[in-house]
Length: 344
Picture (cartoon, rainbow, N blue to C red):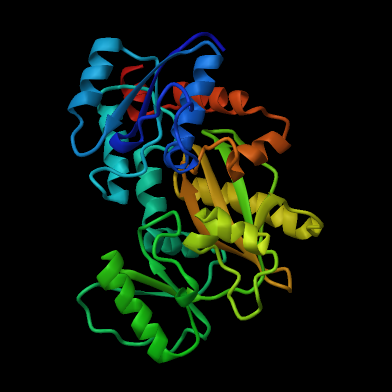
């Protein structure tokens, strides 16, 4: 790839240093993804600048106007503390006719809203767990159509925020209690769906018009006791001590029946299309003991840390971390945003 001017956009508190020297492991964990991306792009010979965004786009607009980057490498996951507002930052980039990496605004809108995404997938007859939504401020009427155990989570938050062992409930009293927790502590509507026992699988997808499916990845819950639900809680995903204690790992999925593998490939592409996604995404699935595949959610712009699932699955497909980042930039440069279709 030719040498590019890449403006890496991150949260204001996650602007990485140029070196890891003098920083503790705890500090590095906070901005590891941002450091991996910026340092790798520089090693590849690209001209890299980083801008932090919190609650205003003034600095971002100035950086684009003054420096005229070839590509904005988008690592934002929120704006002003609101997860669903990242789509507006990307829409702002499109208004500036600025190429960027990752998903387009419509794909972000549809996939970030878990309720809307599930409704769209149901329309396309893509199997998801049966669900119901409980709005903040509305009276809680427990659903009769759903069968326990049930899984309770926020309709909009990601990175397992608000997900704990208490998220899986066995009776009406605990269901009501957990819904109230999401309303009051997470401050969002609550999505309640039937809990699917089985293997948890992740499928990375890249592309705009033509799609590439990465090798299937699996979360293995190790020696977690049977009394605990095998779910990706915040501890399971991010607490390294907890992972080491129970031997929780993620790696390439082994021994998948051909029919399940074919279903994952087909469904990942259908979901990507149904939600209008572009750039790259990760689909989360559960496969029950009978081999039935259920989609849990679609994650636009998943974590790009070199040691995380998406990059590791790309590595399993023979793509180095640097090659992955350049592929994402190439997809951003080639994405046919509406301004390209209108103005050429």
